[in-house]
Figure 1: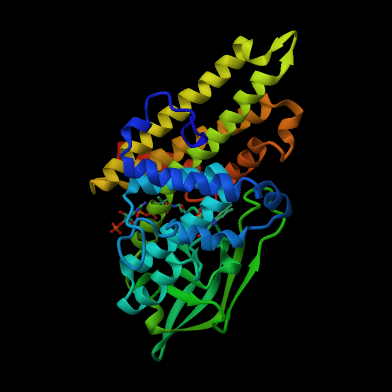
Figure 2: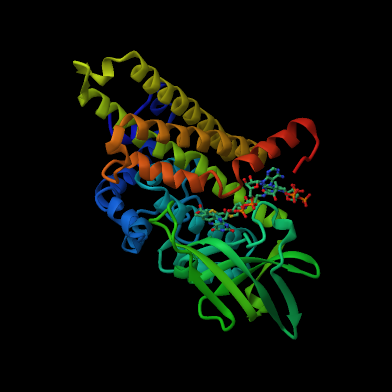
Length: 387
Ligand code: TGC
Ligand code: FAD
């Protein structure tokens, strides 16, 4: 069975259509041939492999669920399988694709003017323009309703002051989708690279998602023409809707990281001989591997149903919160278990579990921390907001 299908304990593969399996195989080949050979080196040197962007675009992996503007028009299950495969390679590669598709192309497609769509969407699908999404601020990301970045009207233009932090793709982005407080509430703006008053700086010393660019964005009297405001994007509901798209992709993506860790732990346990027998013969080792398969299987079935609901137009953002919470926790636990089962060698970048575990420390924080998703589900079942 290929890596992209292992483990498959409940015939998950049989629940997919031929088209969905084909999309998964295409993304899997890209990951096997182009990502896995270089990713440990990229992680070690803190380098995002920009050279892979044109190939991802060529394969239709950027904005894949849109049907127009040169996009592939995949259904949401196929989109999820792409995310799974990319994160089987590395969370940094999946993060790039999540931000480009779910956080940047989605708001332009949903709330942009015709001119904005024509300018950005085909170029972003071709990988010729890169996007970033600025919501989080230095004073705290969990409560974006209190954002300080402000936009005021000045003649026909908008003037933006403030800053955003922990922004994926920030310094490599041609366009930033930025959320700012106006007199009418939160609005979205497209800030183009090289706009006077807009600067970016990379965040250094990361131990996680090292093969991904993470940046700060600064706005100092930054003048933006009114045509760069997303005309239909008003209210906190809009950035939160973008998060629903990206969280959906994350819930799928992290399964790929867990699959990679499980397989490496299984292979090691078969080969390692301790106390006169291969490790795989030990009951505790079998329990730990069985537990990984149990958790991966539940996560697979959860996102498949989530994807079918999304394709049917009935998915709710609270269901996405539960899936993001469950699946990221699952993947982080599996990665840490696998790391431990590899013994000392498990701390080396020659093995993938330590890299995945460190990446997942970001994934459990970004796009809503685990606590935030627990409280979202708690609010749904009790009717009481306890943030
Ligand atoms: P609340 O009253 O809950 O909502 C305000 C309005 O928004 C609607 N809404 C949503 N709509 C769509 N999707 C969602 N997920 C939504 N959540 C809420 C809601 O119905 C309401 O609409 P309306 O029309 O009635 O106004 O607002 P609140 O202030 O109580 O928010 C609560 C909370 C904590 C859930 C929210 O602030 C939150 O989700 N916080 C977490 C912030 C977060 O996740 N930030 C992520 C930043 S981006 C990022 O991390 C990218 S990582 C990139 C990578 O992959 O590399
Ligand atoms: P805080 O909000 O300060 O939270 C601190 C702690 O308090 C957490 O443990 C949290 O769970 C807990 N907490 C919060 N509220 C409550 C409560 N009510 N009750 C109990 N505990 C609570 N943001 C973007 O906008 N765009 C991006 O592209 C982006 N990319 C990122 C990439 C990386 C690698 C990382 C690490 C982050 C990225 N983020 C991005 C930011 C991310 O969304 C925020 O880090 C996240 O939302 C949490 O915000 P915070 O870090 O300010 O933590």
